Length: 410
Image 1 (cartoon, rainbow, N blue to C red):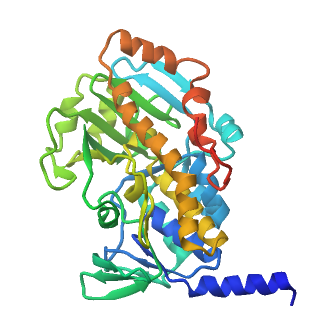
Image 2: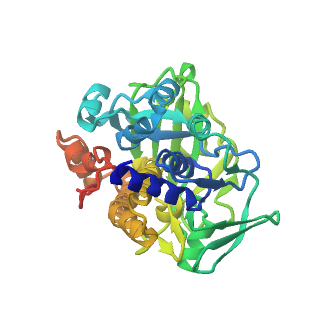
Image 3: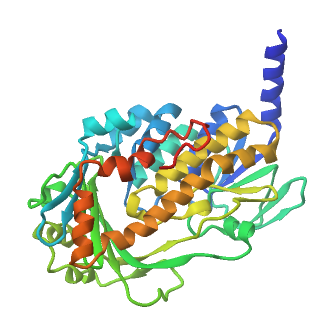
């Protein structure tokens, strides 16, 4: 056996000896576990839910996410379960007039190197779960506490079980317990917006123009974003400004089923038809968290929403978790020094996710401008031929697997 092969075999043994534990079996956690195993690193995944099922209605997967999922072997299944999004249209929420259009599906794939897909959250979760399998996946394990001794981390679960790990990855979502461990306190901030979401059969959308596109209908104090999903239906997210704070402890709250319809009764008939077809039984508060200067503390490192919860206005939440997962797996597989690998991970990811967090927060103001000169100026920018190059290309055309310094920013 050559020296190189001996070194590689030793490295594989070292990787098997590592005890990497992922807390959270969402999109980011499952993607990370799949890629770690592909790289020869043993991984255990702990999920709080006994029967994990996604709470979101649908997921938008732009090219910066789909290219990575294709590389880990999910391409055929992903294409079969998804609808291809045929470009982006901004519309006036009252008149329905197109303000701006961006790239057909063919043009987008040619520019970005992959397609943009709309998929039901449950279908994406099933694809990832099937790829990972059940070995090393522990459901019904809600994290109750942890002790970082310096040499290892001891995880304590609500049912009394414990686990030891060399490295813990906090992929435990928007209300992450492990983020509180890293930061020392809960830093969630209400954005001043609430949302309703749903999925509507396409057959009920008789008034909808351009049904194969991702569309944003803009108006004072609110907007509607919708796109097709795999079975031909349409997923929507309806966002409205809310005066005053978000009072409930929960991030969602029961709502009058017709509350959202009454709030948008004067908007375009196609929009009203869509939201009327899906009862708005829950109102969601839209929260974000400020960018962190570090994602790690001791032997704990964050990923996805736990690291950089962002508003949904750029449709990048799931995509950024997938990017995190691929980069972190690459860093851990490429460097036996755990601390150096995590530093490299943060260097490659923090600035990009911060930029997208800031852009998503700013979009809430841009999308909800009252009628007048500022809205007219916005519409002129959205209608310009270079709007994709100026505002979107740096997000969608990024390849997270490229470790080049500065990749991922405008």
